[in-house]
Structures are given as structure tokens and as C-alpha cells.
Length: 193
Image (cartoon, rainbow, N blue to C red):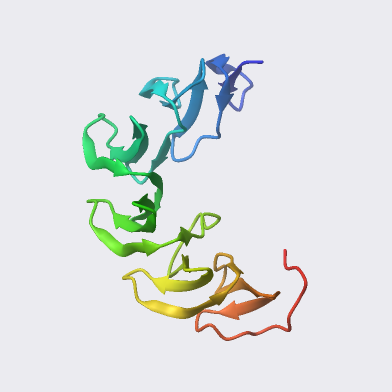
């Protein structure tokens, strides 16, 4: 089937012509038309045309796009803000975005300046609202760094989750809840949801 959007009055606002649509976030939705991805506004106007092979992300005024196998960021006028030099890129949150280059993950700001060095093997991509701590993989273990790249919680964990209300799940064989200082505050569990 094909997808479009209706308003709260159940009136069709964007015609059913897309193979796939995502929910609107901050006034924009990622869509797929004939297998190619783009970005539309609430009126259905294509802000980023449906010409991209991978999904398009909008956040904090910038659009993450993949051009010829490399990721970069453009503004809403299509002007390149951060060059297309990354192997992978995520949305911006609190002014930072996770990016991957030459097998190393880190974070950049909205000018493209590296804030957390691209020295890590992974980032906690489940974290949709990072800060003040970022789950990062170094070698085979996970830990946390702050928003200026300082290692705050040692890289001792097999897996980590995002912080919510000052607590995160960390797995070192079994799961624990840890606080922002890395102190376990719960007994060890087989699973935490």
C-alpha cells in the first residue's frame, strides 16, 4: 500500500503516494517514494527531494543525507553545512550528533567540529536524548563519556543503555542500574526493561 498524512479532522493533507512514511518530528517527516528517500514538511512540500538511497534525518535545523556513500548535513535550503565525509551519521540532539569515519565513532557539533573524538568502536544509538553522558564502546567494552569527551564511567560493561532520570542500565554479565558516577545502585538482574 501507499501512505500519506491526514490531519486531526481526518482530512487528507499529504496524498497517499509514498512507499513509507515516518512520523513528523519538529515539523518534518522522512518519506520514501519509489524506493528513494526524502523529507517533507507538513504541507507535503519536499524539503529534501526523494532521490536518496538511505533514510534522511532532520534535527535541530539540519538534514543528515547520504550522497554517493558518504554522510553529511545540509540546511533547509539544501546548502551543505557539514561536508559529506562520514561513513555513518545520526540526528543532532542537544547540539551534538554521532558520526562514524574510518571505523571510528564520535560526536560533532553543528559546525562539524569534533567534540568527542572519533576513537570509539560504537555509540549507544538507542539514546534519543543524550546528555550529560554518552554511551560509547572502546575495544570490546562500553562506558560513558561526557559532552567534552572525558571518560566518566569506566569501560567495564558488555552493554549499556541511555540515562533516564540519572540512571542507566549497564551489563557486565548481568544487568545493573548505575548512576551518573558509575555506582551500582541495584542488585544484579538477568534482564532490565
